[in-house]
Image (cartoon, rainbow, N blue to C red; front, side, top):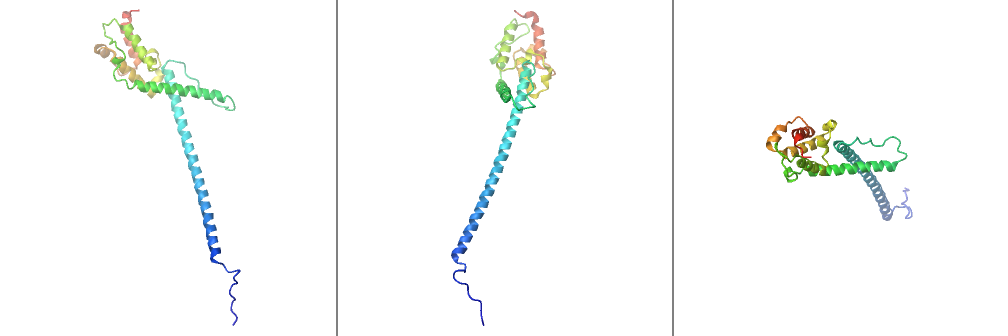
Length: 216
């Protein structure tokens, strides 16, 4: 009976060949795993960059709104709208525009944040205005000086009813009104108090009260 001859030593797979194949397969799998990990990292980095860009855009928009509200509260003409449309040129002008808005917004927000920490206005305005006081001019100048220090003078010096609809402006108007009442005697403050009007209205009422007492 003729059987199948055993493989010759030159064609039979050896232990070394099997080990080499396994090593090659493992190396190929490591390369695929590394490529997959690299792709995943790239996707995560791109998503993180997109989130950062979105956060920066939201911050820029919020600061621009704050800048416009501050500009309006100070009684200045409205700021021009941000440049749009064709962006093929004048990139430097766009950058300057954005930088100015951001600078103004940050400065105003910082000053307003400081103003909200003032608990006792009498530490800044040393004169308490009374019904019979003859110090109205001195009191007025001192009060406006403090408002200017915190970039809030527009709340008493200018009529700007449109700004009252902005939450940030309304919040700071409450701060200025509390300062105004705190710088008046109890009797005078009680006669001026009315929760329905803005600080500008109360300020004008004080001016009317002391119009004949100004020692100009």
